[in-house]
Image (cartoon, rainbow, N blue to C red; front, side, top):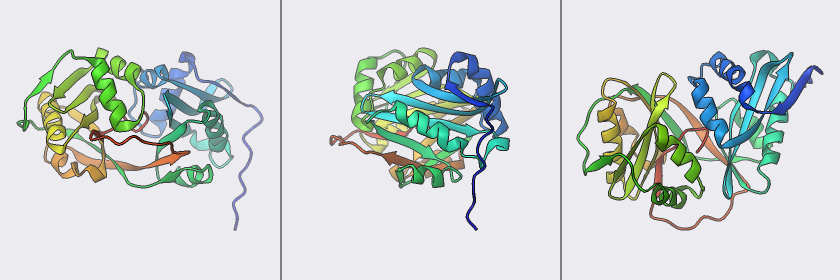
Length: 276
């Protein structure tokens, strides 16, 4: 039997996402067991445009579009459980897709979101693996330095690896977190949810990536650490050895893919599933 979606109530209003909606958005994410603090939502919104759906002034759906030069990431697609099956998810997706213009679009899909995203023209492959746990210390394979560094150089390395222009985002994260650098790579460590998150991890080879991850785990020894790894980079078993375990995954998807310049720099861990 073909399912027929019930239209959203006429009382629902879709409006631009502003700071005034942060607490409502955070309440919505708590309801689906996402760990985001208001501060985590604020970081995403600081580099994004988006929409919220309101019913009686209450946030019942969210969607963000982050513009990174030629690429946009779509994220934080949440619909209140009572509103699902009424086409609201598609409505807010269409709104944020329009914000991206003709840019390449990327997102990380949950299993529940895959059918809708495919209908909207996204194609996926591979796997993003979320690992989380109490970190164990390890000796980096090569020296790692923590502290201020040339953020422009890091942004250029990130652009070479990801194709995205994220200098403002990286500077914002570095301003409140820790910057780790090594020969041929860098990583950022920051507060997130009830612990810390490591990302991005960008490096020219797995040795440099492992060194950065080991340093972060050592700094977070005994504390909750999360990272979102690109599975086919091959570092999931290494990170599991540092006390983290696989707690979730997602499918990277793209629509309107653009050209990519060849580079020897690769992304090993995302900034987040929301921001790529």
